Length: 360
Picture 1: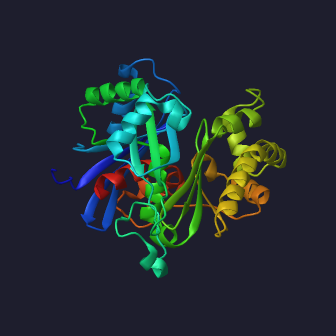
Picture 2: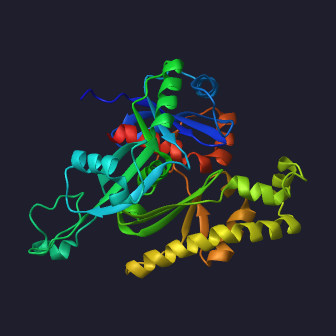
Picture 3: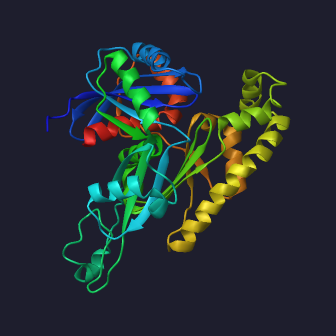
């Protein structure tokens, strides 16, 4: 395999805003942010030409002459599940899903482009003598004489979506090295930004997107739970504007100014999201001995303190934004650096895509 380049552009193809970051490798463990950009886009693109036009504008805003690109896709139609199966070669499991999706996932998969990976799980080092000798770092630990199943992460995008994105990127003449699902990129970004928490604690990531929000729960490197919630920035804005009676920009300013009336509407609207997050925490804590003690929040909505405070009150847990560039150097002009202070909260997916490029 050819050696990866020393720079890459990571792009988050969101349903309302495209985000991009340009990263350069300074050393094996040090990356430098050299540019970032974002651009509002339509929810859907009828043609690959329309998608390519918006991608070209984003690439122009990022500047430079990119040689490599890693894409992340936010799509409610995407498939992302954790399943348990007897240890199986990945190509055989992929074919089984494609041909017999209803039996394995209770969902047909013929229209999806699928990828599969074992979920990382850690054996207890004090019980190392009980672990089968053929247990690798990415396989669930197996005691001698006990047959268990391996956890696999199954991801898929509709074939038509992959085709449209590939055609659009071909029109930009920027080579695409990988296409990933947005939630996995967010998980990868957290690993890079907060390695101590990622490796040693249980944690919950709440990414509030435009059409949906994603809950990811990890525990000491292992992805334990992933679920999408049909609630995002669009639903909150519809509540705040009374379905168009108030301008969205004005409603957002009032939220940021902590208007009491808007805060009450925000609380009522966010209660639905909080309930689903609380249920996810309850499921995890019911299965594991570890507990969730705080929530790491990302996405454009996290810019508003009212949103964070409301979620904290509803969940009874501190909700805090996290910085995907925590361990990166920043090489930006002064004006761009000021903008980063507001925009970093929504760059987690784009950063995760770029991090994975260097990791591979």
